[in-house]
Length: 89
Image (cartoon, rainbow, N blue to C red; front, top):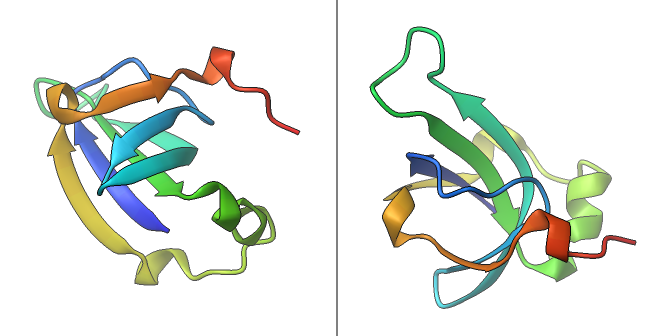
C-alpha cells in the first residue's frame, strides 16, 4: 500500500482502479484537500494498493504514517475503472 497525493482532480472516487507504478491499483480511500484555504487546485490524498491488500486495509492491518508517500499530477493518472464501474463485494 502507498499514500498517493494527486495534484488536481482526475475525476475518481473511492474504489476506482488506476494504472500506477507498473500495475493496477485500487483507491481504497480518498481524502480531498485544499477546497477552502488550499492551493489553486484540489489535492486528493489516496490510499492505494493491489486488490490483494484490500483485506489488510479494511482490517487496518497497517500503520498509515508509515506508508510510502508519492505525488503525481492529475493528468498523469490513467483511470482503468471509475468507482461506479467497479463491483465491490
